[in-house]
Amino acid sequence: MSESRVSEGRVQAISDWLMAQALAEVRIESVFTGFCERLETATVPLLRGHLAVRALHPLFTSMTTTWLRGGKISVDRFGPGSDGSAQWRQSPLFDMLESRVRTVRHNLEVAGDWSRYPLLVELQETGATDYFVLMTPFGDEVTAHERMDGIMCSWVTDRPGGFSAEHVRVLRRLQFRLAVAIKVAKREQTAANVVAAYLGADAGARVLEGRIHRGDGDFVHVVLWYCDLRGSTELADRLPATRFLALLDSYFECTAGAVVAYGGDVVGFVGDAVLAMFPIGEATGAVGAARKALAAMRDAAEKMAAVNRERSALGEPTLHYGLGLHVGRVLYGNIGIPTRIDFTVIGRAVNEVVRLEALTKDLEEPVVVSSAFAELVPLAWRSCGRHGLRGVSDEIEVYAPPGNPSA
Image 1 (tube, rainbow, N blue to C red):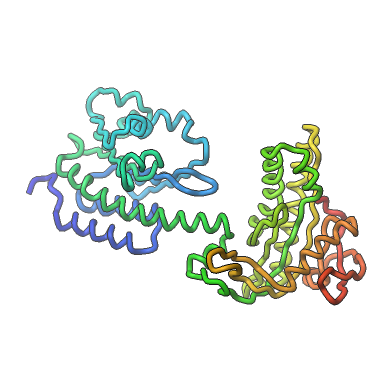
Image 2: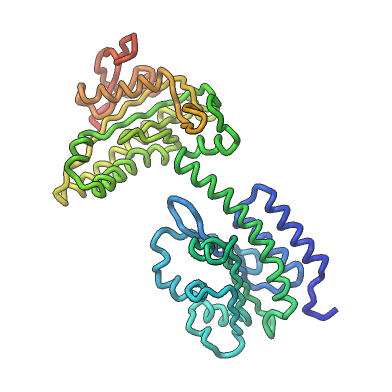
């Protein structure tokens, strides 16, 4: 057996491992790093392995995982617009995509046009001798290229003479199996990203666990948050659609963004209103959930104040909203028709928090909380008296926070 010959048994073991990963619940980065480690063990002299894959995610469009000999791993995610960056356009992978070729190889031991790529110059200076790239599309090559759907892997060695023909054979063979495992992991992560973006992290996880039938749900004890933008009808009539949507996004980033930042779940957007909840669990307790809601309330007010300063400086109307906070037992689950289901919360407490928010207009208070909520956190609450809530039989006492948090 020659020095560069790779044991067929080891190659088959890696292939079997990749298929097992495709059947397991794994993440892309763990599959790739595990693959690189096994390649090195199988005597493929890897110095560096790099994986690039597109992502369907609200915050980023692609991700890369880089493995270096010795076990150093880096994972990078790139947001919208990163495709136009100078770093990407100076990458060999960019030229590869532009020319629609599926494999590229550069001998770094001799002078060549590879020197126009800063990455390859840097690799060569650290001792790299060979740079080998393989692209594996997911499905039809033309469609996959249009969708940027597949994987690109670059393999680097510092072996004198570069990768042998045997090493290249092994990399070509195993990258197809790697692509299968990555494709499955990507689809699972995409599903999780999408349901989390549209349903919220907790509801999304429940749906992926199989809670997809009408009537599936649980009674849970939660702190409820409901806020509504003031004057939205007038703003929608007066502003072009694109400007109004941008305005809504700013408002949601202040309010819903604060909820998520402090551990709450956004249940849904009801027009320009935000319905959210802070779960009451064994670790958190009702007091802990209420304190999180209050922290989110303050954070939202501060963020909105900053947005309004910017809007005022531009001569734009400032934004204001009312917020109701409550605590109660709700049914958390699926409602709707068999072919169109919504995962949400329902119950008397939900109706009450919506009515509480409506009181903010009459009371001219930006935030109103129920007595049940106020009892959880000892603050210098200001009583706003007892009020009847539309659709609720009993009057309840309501309070406003100390001071006057601007919303």
